[in-house]
Image 1 (tube, rainbow, N blue to C red):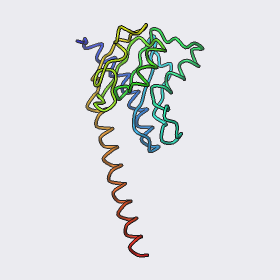
Image 2 (image 1 turned 90 degrees about the horizontal axis):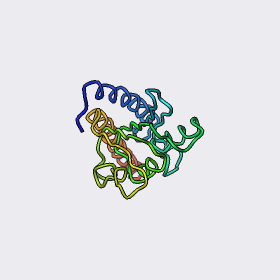
Image 3 (image 1 turned 180 degrees about the vertical axis):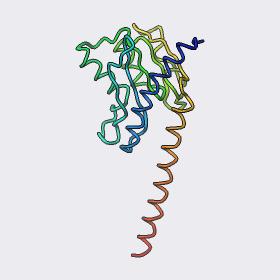
Image 4 (image 1 turned 180 degrees about the horizontal axis):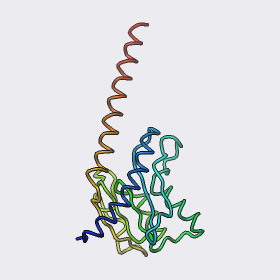
Amino acid sequence: MHLSESERLRHEKWMRVALAQAALAEKLGEVPIGAVIVKDEKVIAKAYNLRELSHVATAHAELLAINEANQLQEKWRLEGATLYVTLEPCPMCAGAIILSRIQTVVFGARDPKAGCVGSLMNIVEDTRFNHNAQVIEGILAEECGQRLSHFFKALRERRKKEKVMHNSVDNLQ
């Protein structure tokens, strides 16, 4: 999909809000994924991943933002809303997007392992469902992808050091 300069800038503005949410997740040691829901050019909800801290498999940024928007709007239908998320939604989140009637999904980085808004499949544009969402991908993709890459690289290095430390302690005993 071709975007005008003004459309691209508008989407980048909201994706930066989602990136700020991802940064908050990262500070907590969570996978840095952020989401924001916008309607009528106003943020109605924002969230970040809380799966690790909450020990809840469904605590994805998208679902938390959808739940917040539902509560604040006092309705489950989010018609006319746009979801901005730093990483392509997984199948669970794609299903929630359909069920909540979100109009548009804008994501940054593709997820080749679990992405279901274009990478592995495209659930939200599958016309067999009773609702479809428009998809705009690649907004600030490099920045979104780099945040995740840096996080996982640091995590691997930290785990490697912990393993070395653990093995050193075992050798002393």
